[in-house]
Length: 388
Ligand SMILES: Cc1cc2nc3c(=O)[nH]c(=O)nc-3n(C[C@H](O)[C@H](O)[C@H](O)COP(=O)(O)OP(=O)(O)OC[C@H]3O[C@@H](n4cnc5c(N)ncnc54)[C@H](O)[C@@H]3O)c2cc1C
Image (tube, rainbow, N blue to C red; front, side, top):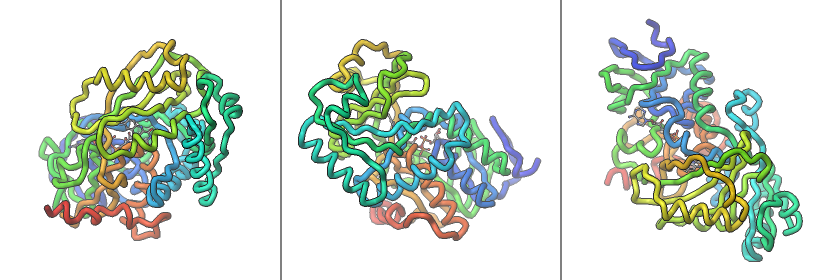
């Protein structure tokens, strides 16, 4: 059997197989990285413990959003959003990519001032964004409650169904010769070798840890904390909302570094369903639904969209974001092993930023010029923590 033969299900290899890069973790980040590396001509293996796109990627909302929390976050989200635009026509219908636009909702004059600041900041960086009066907001989204101050429409933001995209990327990589292994955990990722649960050894000079919130299991000492989130999805109510709606207060709650929080964040799906988010919680690593937090999240949604309380919610789930202390991902060489690269720590933006992450790593591996400066995302910024 050729080492480049695509695999699925449990596979046994002997002796060790060699690749240019072995990627552990078949979420959106690992799958996108496998595809980018395969497109760059590298011989790649992608190993997923369960099934492609089944981790945080399946739990996430799929909002592709340009963020302005910092210049580094902006660069990564904007570059990625443009890569999503470029790839969108080639995605399968099941990926449900739609350029819905984000509508940031301002509840009061203070938040409207924040919307104006954000608009000017984005305009200075060539990102289209339109400030909306309260009347324009109401005309665009009639189910929003009366009395809101206005909003900001960022039309190039989009939504997607992430697990389908992760599987699609893995299959595209496979078509280019990548070896895809699912249903097998990587038990060791170090010293140029990925050892699988069945003892198979895959050797490569570049090992990529793309294990999301579980990355520290194979690269101990990473500054990653699990940040739990709840989402709910309704039955089908086409047209109930038309844009991804997010409260401007989200910026305060999502980016607070401690404490439980909920924020109004509602997304219309191609199916006519509404995805209702979201919560953020540290220190709770079980998958159980937290009823008080869920209730607070649903109440928050009803505060902005009163009629949402009349819709039936058909499923609720939780997932874990991989959070870093400085809210930026870890993309690049690890500081502990010259054969290990990291692609984790994307917190609540990993669907958005998967493509730019993959592009950065593929550029690094092939020695080509990256589209954005890689320095701010390098794990080396945490060198002291690692060694501690
Ligand atoms: C509630 C919620 C809402 C979100 N909403 C958004 C959003 O709207 N927009 C956005 O951009 N992001 C969003 N996110 C964040 C986004 O979902 C994540 O950042 C992203 O999915 C991370 O992808 P990943 O590939 O790094 O991790 P994962 O998808 O978790 O993939 C890691 C993979 O590694 C596998 N694995 C683990 N251990 C092993 C092992 N030992 N061997 C092999 N494989 C292993 C796992 O099975 C998993 O499939 C949200 C997250 C949550 C929880």
